[in-house]
Image 1 (cartoon, rainbow, N blue to C red):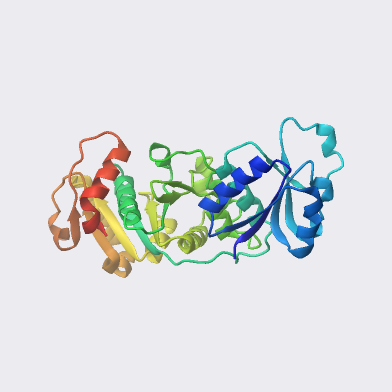
Image 2: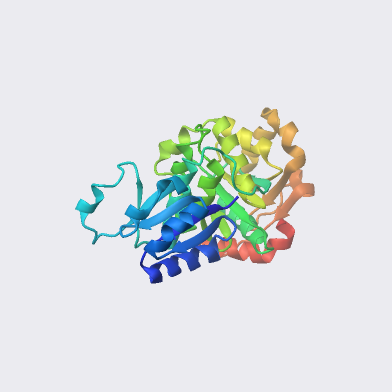
Length: 340
């Protein structure tokens, strides 16, 4: 199913610009129709129902809301506020002059909450790769992003899900989109179409789809292992490859993610403390026996492969740069075949 969107405005140039952009970038999820004539709007609504309609002030009085599941008022700052008095108080409003990506994200976010089901968009089923290390500072996020980019370079739809307690995203991608906290708020609300919400507020950079970081630390900390399961399962339905960047803390949420994953990359950098912590994990956690067949060890930063892991390890070179983006792009280019 695609969202059937009606753009009803007398501003023909604006309607064409918005329609062209949405049709180009969201062809698989939004079907756009335009009406710019007052005399045509009633006929359109009598012949077809729409999931969402963006309606400007000039047309709002001519819209039969029975033909639209979620009407939204397109408003501009130059509108006379008194004109809003006759409108339904519960009508959603969306600012007309803003980035098209923001308009689309708002449409998805709002409609996901009223669509009445978690079904609705065509589902994929991603291969799930979890990237983890028992210690910080080993380059775990760099490896996760290099792996994600290597898959994107092969034409796959890649979703990068950062579940670190303190997100590394600000140093990797633009944080201009809507926060993953919007998703956290509805994880236990079954009437919300979670998949639609995630697909709508996601951002894309270099072929990698991602959700912007949480609004505050507590938003990540209060998630349960069941929440993590639902989040991972839903994200896996919108991509070919889901890459999960996990916190170094090993808790029930990390345990759940490792159990769900189809593939696990454990990152090391040759430091003795990392080897010691990894050996503790392997010897003291009964989960290791259940996941060891899925694990590949990544020896990062030019470190030699440690003896216990020689048969299942990939050794990556040291990239001389302090810029994380440069590092993960370089590793992706140099080691794409081996990583995949």
